Amino acid sequence: MILYKKKFADCSLFADDAKLSRYVLNQDNSTDLQKGFCALKEWSDYWLLKLNIKKSNVLSLSYSNTVIKYKYSASVDNMIIDLERCNKVRDMGVIVDSKLSFSDHITEKVNKAYSILGIIKRSFQHVDKVAFVLLYKALVWSHLEYANTVLSPYKQYLIEVVEKVQKRATKLVHECKHLPYTDRLKYLKLPTLKYCRQRGDMIQTYKIRSGYCYDES
Image (cartoon, rainbow, N blue to C red):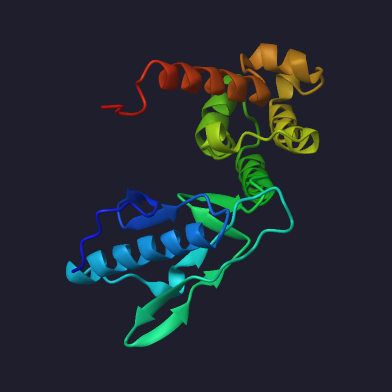
């Protein structure tokens, strides 16, 4: 195994999932990222943890449409295989796209939420206040709030798409279905989803500034 003194790229690990990242502005940056990947592969081969090259993808994050898409490759059985480039990947249950809009992820989770709401509606002839809040928070809200500090929608149409799920859900409670949305929330003692995301952002910001998230030593 070759030991490198220079750090070519940042590496993030979670269980058996690994990600290499680097700012790539020119060919030298691209070469460093390639060296970082080679170092990771050599380390994994040395410890008999074979990388699945078929599941290894390259994703460029940029607002520009003129990104130079450098090629990256790996040596497998004395053959050079180019890594597949993609426009979006699934990471820890979140669909990350090249523009960081998270529109694909939000669409998928909203459809999932509507599907679960349909099951609740078909399974219960009458849902009271207490039962609805329990079912909604456990089965629906959890999908909409997962990783919200990362993928909080910033486009107005996505904000409305997500909020519309809760607007429809609260109408399942017969006692308040005739009330306006804000009054239904007061009756059920629920906040808007937008408020929950803003509150989560403030909590996360406080943790970061107070040093509770990362070890700076």
